[in-house]
Amino acid sequence: MIISPESLAVLGGAIALAGGLAGSAIGIARAASNGVATLVEAPGQLRNVIVLSSLPMTQTFYGLIILILIITSVVPNLPPEGGGGFAVFACGIIAASAELWSGAYQGSVCASGISLLPKTKGAILTNSMMLAVFVELIGVLGLVFTIMALSMLGLM
Image 1 (cartoon, rainbow, N blue to C red):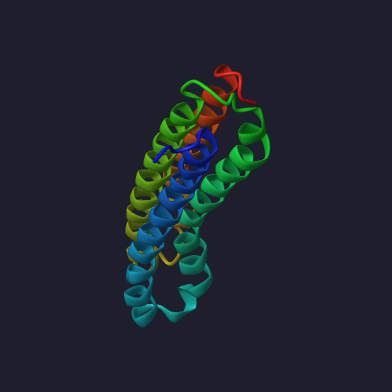
Image 2 (image 1 turned 120 degrees about the vertical axis):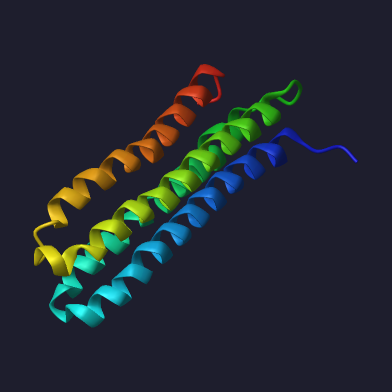
């Protein structure tokens, strides 16, 4: 059975989205789990808990952007022969890894901030968000580097 380059490319995009979805799910679950415990202690912190719990969701959007770019811009430009499909597949794996780990660990940072909301009466929110942005940057870099790699391969 021969696998077409287009199929490999779309599979790479789907893997990028799957990494983003998994990272977001893990990160949100970690943060929201602490959020439930925090809300028992300080119900007035609901807005802050929602803000911090939702931050890891962005990795899903980065994976979706990569999938859309691959389907709309890369697949139509793939040469019928050569390793273009494998190259796009590899880019998808790199993106998936960045989004997965970024989302999961951003959830850990947010969970720590959420657990301290009652003790600080919400004052930790801005600092927690700033620290979570550092982990977010890895997800953004995964998106940017994937786009750069696809461009350097001459596929975009």
